[in-house]
Structure formats: C-alpha cells, structure tokens
Amino acid sequence: MRRERGIHEIFREDPERADRELWGRRAFLANVGAMSAVLGARIVYAQHMPVGLVPAALANTAEPFHIEGKDGLVVLNDRPLSAETPPHLLNDDVTPSERLFVRNNGIPPDPAMVTRRWTLTIDGESVRRRRRYTVADLKRRFPPAHRQLVLECAGNGRAAYEPSVAGSQWTLGAVGCPQWNGVLLRDVLEDCGVTRDAVYVAYWGADSHVSGAESGVPISRGVPVAKALQRDAMIAWGVNGGPLHPLNGHPLRLVFGGWPGSTSGKWLRRISVRNVVHDGPKMGGHSYRIPCEPVPPGAAVAPEDMCIIGAMPVKSLITSPESGTRHSFGWPLNVHGHAWVGDGRVRRLRVSIDFGRTWRRAELWSPANRGAWANWDFLTRFPTRGYYEIWARAVDDQGRSQPMVVPGWNPKGYLNNACHRIAVYVV
Ligand SMILES: Nc1nc2c(c(=O)[nH]1)N[C@H]1C(S)=C(S)[C@@H](COP(=O)(O)O)O[C@H]1N2
Ligand SMILES: [Mo]
Image (cartoon, rainbow, N blue to C red; front, side):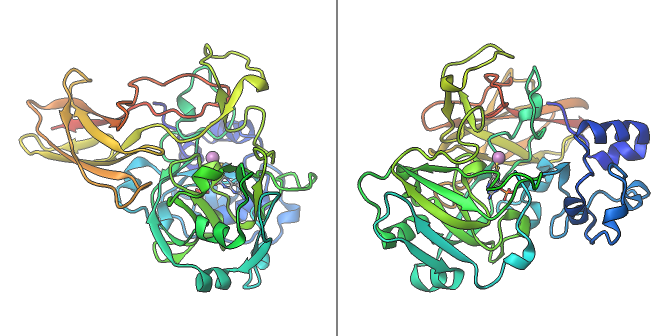
C-alpha cells in the first residue's frame, strides 16, 4: 500500500515539491482557522497572510505538524482537517484520545459556543415526546455507559485504489478504539418514546461549511433504527475517562460501533427519529454509498445504483513492530495488533512471514465488549537473516476474510479492508 508522507517530511527534503503538493491539495494552508489549530497558536495578523504561504514555523523546523492534544498524527488535509494515526502509534489496546484520528467535513463550532448551556434536542416524525437535555441532564438521568467501540472512517485505505479517487488519501490510520463514556442512545430514545413507524435515527451537529457561503451543516447522517437501539450505540461526552477532544466532537457526539465513522455525529445538537431513510447532506449521491452491484475500476455509476454502507468489513492491523524494523537474528519476535468487524465477531487471525505461502494462527483475545476490537499476539522466529514481510489476515464469524489485494473499486474509494503487511529486516 502506498504510504502518504506528511507534508512536513516532503518540505524538508524538497521544498518545491512541497509547494506543488500544497497547491495540489487545494491550497492546503489557505484556511487560517484550521492552520492555527495545526500551529497550536492563533495567527495574529492572519488577514495579511498571503494565501498559500507556508508558515516559517513549519518550514524551518524538523518538528512535525502539531495539533494541540494530538500526538504523532499525520495531517492529510487542513480544510477541512483530516489527520490519521500511523499504525505503530495505534499499538495500545485502548486508543488514547491523543492518537484518535480526525475527520472533519466542515469547520468545527467556535469553542465559545461550547458552554454548559449546550443542549441536545430529540425530535422527528417518529418521536412521541420531543425533549431537550443538557449534558448534565444526560449524566443525571440515565445509567452511565462505558464501552470500547471501533470508530473507522469508511474511506480508510482509500489511497490504495486504482484509478485513484478524490477525497482524503487515508492509508491505514483512520481508525481507533477508545473507551467511550456516556449513555446508551436507546435509553435516551426510550425516554422520548419511539413510534412504530420509525425508520432512521439521524444527527445534526454544530459544524459549518468550509466555504462559509453555504448555510446549514456539511454533513448529517445516521443509522437505521435497529442499529440505534443496539448496545453499541452511544451518546458520548468522554473518552477514556477524560473529555472528548474538541476535534473529536466535544462536548457531545454519537458513536456507532463498527459502522462507517460518518454515522457517528460530532458536536451533537439534535437527533431526529425519522419515518423515512434520512435525507440530510451526504446521505445521497456517491457519499458513503457503494455500487449495489460490483463495477469495473473507474466506472461511472448512476446515483440510483448506489447503496448506503452499513456494517464495516473485517479488518486488522499490525501495530508492533513498526514497519521497517531491524530485528536481531536468533531472537523470537512478538507481533501485536488488533482485528475487528462491523457487526459480528472476529473468529481467527492468521499471520504469514513467507508472502502468504503458509499461515499460522495468532493468539486472539476476546474483545472488551461487542463493538470493540480484538487484540492479537503472535510469536515468530526467522530461519535466516534477511528481508521479511509479516502479513496479517482476519476472518469473521461468517467465514469472510480480508482480501490480500485491494477489494472492489468504487467511485469514492470506501471499504478497503486489504491485509496489512509490514517489513522486517532480520540482521
Ligand atoms: N458533525 C460532524 N460529525 C461528523 C463528521 C463531521 O464532519 N461533522 N465527520 C464524520 C466522519 S466522516 C467520520 S469518519 C467521523 C470521524 O470522527 P473523529 O474525527 O472523531 O475521528 O466523524 C463523523 N462525524
Ligand atoms: Mo469518514
């Protein structure tokens, strides 16, 4: 799989190329708001700053871009902001908030908006009692829920599709599995009463369009009612016992374990229980939809032939060692990683060190709860010195396994669950 390098890396080696890349990424640094987030400080004379100028703080230092409260993420776009986590930084069994990827479709709400008066409204055609809660109300009125749930962008792995497709060029790191702290969505929905004609549970967030010209929200999606009533559907105000990071939806967000990240609405203001399949922005066209029937690579697909993505496919990561590691000959090497699947269970994780000729079973641990990833360990020895690749392949409880090569091409490059492979030099 192609590895997207951070723009700072490119800049250090080849400033001219970096310049082209910056423009190629649609004026990467044109948005001063998001750029301030990357710099970790407000740009005081922002109004005088030429569009496209690379801040000297980034150009003159070997330090990677820093996002306040995030550690080691690779920024792919800044307008809107997307940043992914390199696999070896996802080695923790429970993903720390600092290592959780960021995917924005627009501009997050002004922090001044995020006060104790923040409310969540539940409404829609299929709700019996329209209600409004503050975060304190939610904490007081409903049993607390703490669950580890996988959040993965449906576009994770998009960079590997040929022909290439537009959108953030995610490689492997648009995924994480922190513990979410909040309440079960179904407890709140029960409090309001869901009528029998309910079809979809939709979210509305407080973010705005990048352009500023368009009104309304950049994205408003959701899930079928049945998924919303599962125990892996949460309204969360925290991760791992701390607050949500401002870029991950503080003060309130939805989390649907194992479904496209785009269903997990951030900066949550309103939930609508709909009597139709929700029709908010990014529910139609090619957004978060794939051809209902497979198509040849590069095909044009009519919107009416596209189907909404549901549960995510089985997938795994090798998070230790880091790809390219040098390992001493004669010593066993412990390989560690995670495996997950949308709505089922991972049944098996197999590892190969001989390019897929033979596979051996890794030790696969039970996930913390439904919707969490399973951790796995594999102890391997190497017969001689030299270059090896370690490949990992997960199989789910329905016998579906990860493909070795990039799976079915689709117009927006979703659902690439090809096997992860790393390089190891035995020296
Ligand atoms: N309000 C709002 N919710 C949103 C988004 C957004 O842009 N605005 N992005 C969605 C997408 S596409 C993904 S993959 C996840 C990413 O969550 P994260 O940024 O916390 O990792 O949030 C989803 N929820
Ligand atoms: Mo996403």
